[in-house]
Length: 259
Image (cartoon, rainbow, N blue to C red; front, side):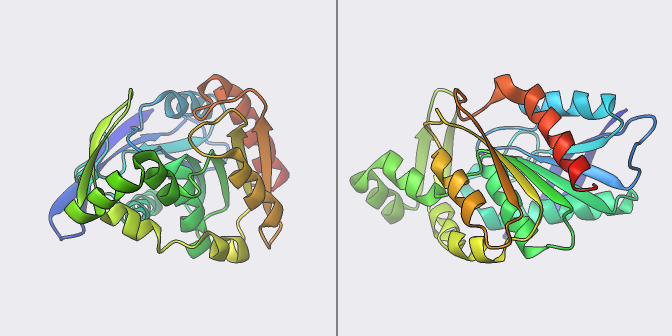
């Protein structure tokens, strides 16, 4: 069964907003208190290929899975112009609070790109709240990536004017400069020193959006030693053609960790 929920939240300026959630629950739950939560990527939505595939697989395997659109995305409120990792973290807080009200006590975060990076930071800041993380091409060095995308002159104009319209084959969005200012407050070295949640990372070696070496570095140098990585030699950034294999690896990982 899939339920659609409109969850009221407040935007950063206290303007009423909302998150659109879809909670998929099997008729018989293998783990009644466990819910997997999918976190989509930048300018993406909860109804992308990965989320839909994971939802179908979760229901078939007797697991609950919750998807939602971050504010500024899809069917949720808010704007992309006001996007920050800090706002994303608050969105996750609201979703997990809602799920606790539905009886769930253990959570596995499954993130893609921006969602993966957000999920890593959420688990680092709430180590007792998250049982495990399984993330695809987490968005390390996003501030650097966005600035390189524009080049020095356009980046300076973005900072000066406060907003820039980013356009690709997949999207056209206005993004505020606070996106960069906020990203700069998240120190990946601190994350390496303090991250302690059992985690499996996936990355394609042909990813031309997020360097796969950043994922390998995090897995190799995370101080707790709790992070494993799986690289797909011919995989791109999205890894949509590997969804079923990723799901199989996620289940093996969670079983090995007793989750």
